[in-house]
Image 1: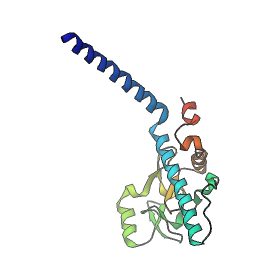
Image 2: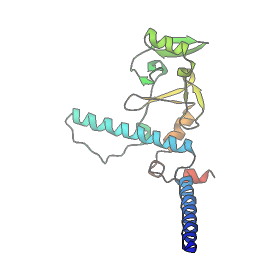
Image 3: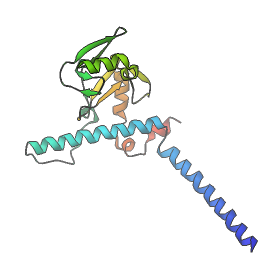
Length: 183
């Protein structure tokens, strides 16, 4: 009786090992580096925000909703002036915010509470570039707003363009030559 039990244990161990190695292989090809996966998730969120806003505007104006209409990814985000961004809430305000100068760098927000938060909490003054994953100072960042008013901070126009280049259907839906070409 011991032989069949030993056989089952060995058989289960082999199957478990094979399954684990396959899942790790699939993960490495499907997800790629965490930064790329995170960037693509953010890009998809920006796309969905744009189309949700388009549907809402169509409903408000009693227009028919064209769900199939595809627009270039450049239209999903709008470049905004830093002085119209509340850098504490990371939201587009649509109007000039108060300038708050800290260590020679200018940040923007409205209200004394936000100014105190910016000056007292250094982490509020920084963000991550969605493409490079580098920590950047909001005072020098290139700012774009999605349709909901959420702000994305980029190191430069070049990293913004790289972000938009990832907006093809292959990247957004999980299979990309971009990820494989890098290895």
